[in-house]
Image (cartoon, rainbow, N blue to C red; front, side, top):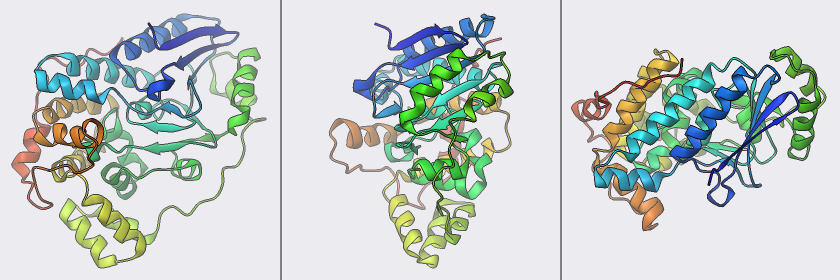
Length: 346
């Protein structure tokens, strides 16, 4: 059974992630089906834009099949690598899709859902948008292009989001540029219908002419306090020292959050974000495949998933203390692990 619904609606190709009981979490088959749908819409002269949304009221997409990744790593089979390859190729394709790609990111937008949205041209937030990349809490790192786009939000902001897994609501997502349009949730269906009935020619301007009647000013927010500069420090222990020294309520909260995460994942993530800020998108995705496979060889990846998603005791026993992660251990995770490079779509 496919969990990707695709249909032509006038001038648009409409893709819906249709796994609401799992918050539209991605599987390998879903990524493959979505890639095929996008390829078909790309060459269809009648299609002037692509719309992507999620079924149900709770999520656009809340991630990927993390339990499968855990089980695959434990078994030593190829399921995890196949999934990541299929997903990352899709992420890269979205980043250079030639027609307007419009993601309606209402509800949870986490993990794999970030990869299906932030790399596209338009991210339309709804009232219930909740964006996060909480991977360090399961002993992993913000993948699906996170190492590329997070640094481009600004080093301190990207490090904060990637390390802490901080949640952004509608106002914050718009303020930081994760979303670049706000349309109230109750008008999403009307906007999609209007796009389908318009004479779209594949240009951004044609889409903008339709959207102008629907876009609203998002609520104002003051999400970034002065202490955000603490996240400019070069190491995780240095970030924590800066937060402890600042001692503002916000800084204390961030420090407490960081101390609950995997120290290894935090250190690897910080270095991956530093590198990703200097890479092209394709280069970043190739590196992320290596990083992902590297995490399969760590204790924290399995312990984090066990504590958060299997036993759900929320009490992971991490392999290191903060400050106990060495540069050689970071390099080992970030080293070359993929036997074959990603085979990008032409």
